[in-house]
Structures are given as structure tokens and as C-alpha cells.
Image (cartoon, rainbow, N blue to C red):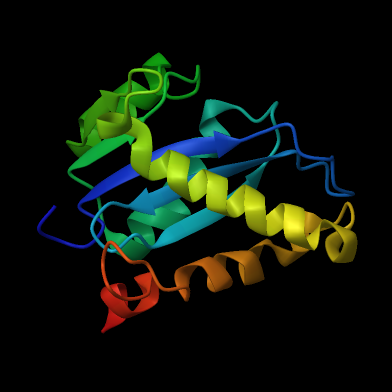
Length: 158
């Protein structure tokens, strides 16, 4: 990637304890250049329309329309609605091949880091992990990444 938020990856962390707000999943969206990420709480039963609304609000409105998205083959990412939306935005969709690091390694590493942070804080967070997700995102984006020799926040904002 040459530009920030030009190429992104998307994945889900699922199987989390259900919060009082009924969230049980997190949509993980990562910029491939700066490694900056957004962690969006979701419900496993959320529709593609809900994902699209979150995506437009949290990604497109903040960072612009990406040129490409790498994602796994989750049914939300392979739906006709999602494909049509991305086609209208002129965003290329690339569906990863399972366990193929060149296509889905970025999001898998970030997802693993997110899971490690949540696991380390589960005693303090309890079932209200969703209320603390913005601080988890802040912590991740302000942690040094060897691959970019900076924090994602520094890479994104200077």
C-alpha cells in the first residue's frame, strides 16, 4: 500500500461472552500500511446491513473509501449485498484462502493480539468487555510494531 487506509483487512473475533448489550463478536478492521485498527462490537446475528452501516460510519467516513479489502469467506463478506456495495464504492474484494498468510496474515495477527489483550483483562472487564473496547483499541494503536518501527498511531498521524 502507498496510502493510509487504502488497503485494509477485515475479520471477526467470535465466541466471546455475551455482554449486557448482547454483543458476542468483534469486527476487526486493519489498515495494511500503518497497522492501525478499529475494533467494532457486533452480535453474531447482526445482518449485513448492520455491518455495512458500521463500515460506512467507522471506516469510510473517517478514512475514505479503500481501494481493496482482504477478508475471510465469512457469509457476511460473501453476500450479494456486500459485493454490490463494494462494487458501487469501486473497492476490490479479495477473499482469503484459509491459513494463507499472504492474504489473511495481517488480520490474523491483529486478531490474536486483540484476543490476548481481552484475555489478560477478562478479570477486570468481566462480561462488559464491550464497554472497554475503545480503550483496548487505543492500547493496540499505541503499541510499538516492529514491522513499521512505530506505533500505528504514529504511522497514521505522524
